[in-house]
Length: 279
Image (cartoon, rainbow, N blue to C red; front, side, top):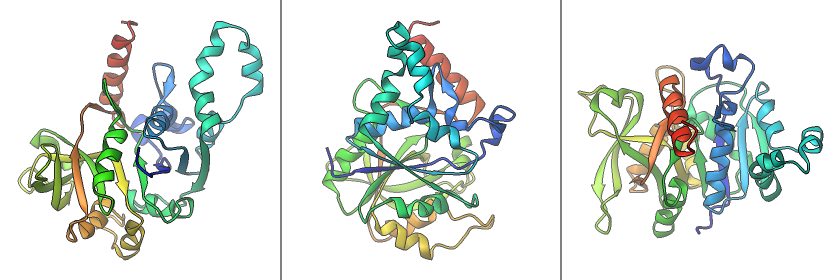
């Protein structure tokens, strides 16, 4: 494993695509079967040897914190029954990880959310997971794959990418780069474009919600100007580092479900139910 100790979760957003469900329930607490998205993300971070979970949240997201805290009444209710096992995974996370929280006062883009988390990050490289992107595979988790690559390039940020259809590139940050000489799946990034039109996109290699970021990113974010919508984009900050040769894009092994959309959420639910023999 690498020396990455902390994973940052930007989870302050309102989840408006899932209204009215997300009026009272954080979108990260929406379950795929019986497990909420945020727990899948924490478990992926744990699989990569990470034990410090840093949550950039809001005053409306107390349910996330409560999920990873003991619930004495429920635990007493199921103690000694078969249902006790249903709490084993979340209790394992609670027992083996340290959780810290900071509130994002305004929603001003992913770059702003990550910068808000700076007080929770020591002056060291850290991971970022967006729980909306639920990733699964038969082998090592996506973040584990990325930490392995980071160990070979400790001065670089790593972003996860996948091929998408050209008609969907306007939903993502898109990269262009050169394959590393010793890899068929890792690129030295030359350019990054945030949500380009199909005509403007340099490739169909889209960034998804997994990052490994060096502490240098905070200095760059301080100098990154907001976009036309007043948001600070992590893509713009990473482009600054890419110009210095310090960003690698990795085409991961596995499948991603966009659980930030209703369609992707349903697809993930059906897939996980099929895998578990429920349907």
